[in-house]
Image 1 (cartoon, rainbow, N blue to C red):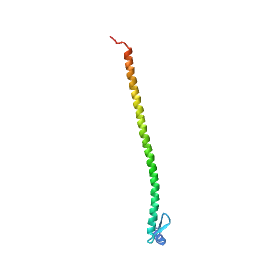
Image 2: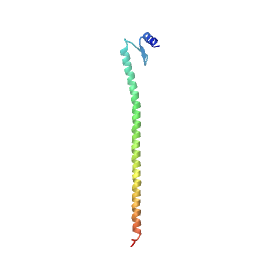
Image 3: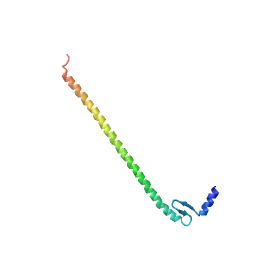
Image 4: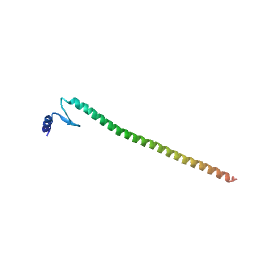
Amino acid sequence: MFVSFTKTLKKMSGFRLGFGIRVNKRNWWYWLVAMLFAGMFYLMWYMIIGAGWCLYYMCWAIYKIYYYMFKGIAFGCKKLFQLIKGKTAATSEASVEPPNE
């Protein structure tokens, strides 16, 4: 199998990569330049995808920060309200009742 594959490659005088250019000793420079441009387009495409994922995770992090911040504020306000309500109830009860002797 490998012997026939090697013979086929030699018959083709090189091998094809990507976009229809056969690479051999004469045109390796053209192939290198063409792959450079193809690589730049691939790099641009994956950078756009990566920037999209970065934007997604930044928005998710901002959401979580504000979610926990407001949740903490709400919890703190609830505890503060209970504390104030408990102190006013305790002081009002003490002022209404006459002192025991």
